[in-house]
Length: 384
Image (tube, rainbow, N blue to C red; front, side):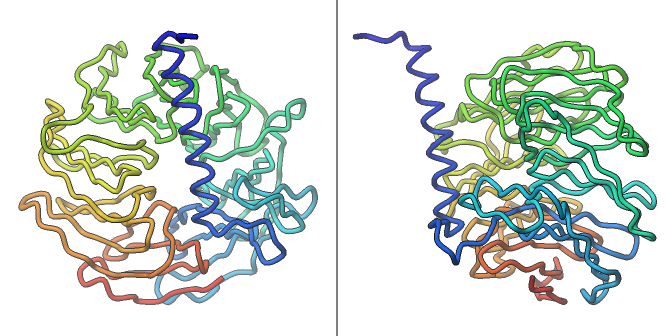
């Protein structure tokens, strides 16, 4: 039987998605025995004096930015109906796994759990509130929370994105896509950009959730879109980077490869825009650096491990990590790269930068490292 090319492509994408989850499970050491622990890859949230780490055990830990000492009692995220994570091999009995960055607004910190619950905690009093996003479906939350004042925008694997009031946790609106939403939404100038496993990116009015436009790629989208100067950049499992006009979703350019480098696997991590360049890590171990105006390849750097961690930047310097645990810097003015530190541990979590410090959340032996971005030296670390 001869299948149409479109159907073949869909089958390939579905198989690739499943394979990717399996690969990540293996990389996390998931063998479904008694020694297996839950895996979580939440980047830290940075406050004025503290950093907030959501651990794989489902605990929210408050640490001093200066020395890594605990500055408050731990908060167990969900002490009731615990849900194991997608990479936990069904383990339960601990707090719920958190995959997305917590959101801080004043005294309130909001956390989205894999159990489908949204939790809010007072930083000073630890008074809490919680709500189940969708009681009927009981689906999970993988992405992080993005906020605008008292409004929280939350992706869910039931295919919806929800807008909640952070104080009451009542629903303002919801919007349904055609498949799971794992990517953290992006808010820009009153528009919320939502990427879905249905292969589409949606532009919504952030005030009421009405759709302005949608654009279809040829594969599920795990990475959050990035927006700058009226252009939306989308990295998809179709091994393509799409640049769209933010006004109407029309295609400006796309990148499928060049004579120097071709994406051989999927774009999982969220890219970053620095000056006139888009830096996009690929699961094939290549960092693609494109000119944002034209989509032309400026640089490419290949590594012997996949790139699943989202990069950060300060000035013209980009910082990124391989899944094998090596932290790199890239000077976009010269194209020079420097190996800053080898953690010899798995890094799936996105990096976070605060001043001169890069926070690195490792997964093999879970820990948080504060690294001097100039020389790669570890200022302090906290072992979970």
